[in-house]
Length: 87
Image 1: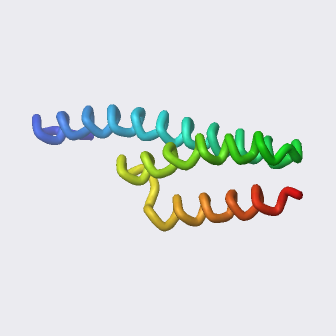
Image 2: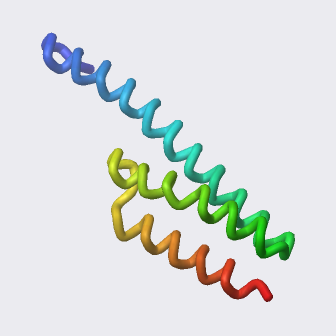
Image 3: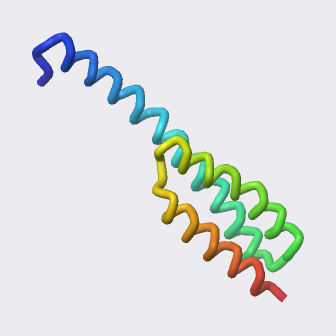
């Protein structure tokens, strides 16, 4: 348990930051899920639109420090490949 005033403040800040990051991760996962659902449906136009919507969200997660740049790039690449494979 935090004893010093500085440590108590740090604990409060960590709780706040954790909640914010959790919300960001959840939002990004929702966008990714929408892309995957569009891929499952087999409608290429819907999948492309969902992918275009998800891309900036993923990259925003990188700039906010929720995801590593390579992780976001890997996720984008794999989703793009799956969307491209829809005939």
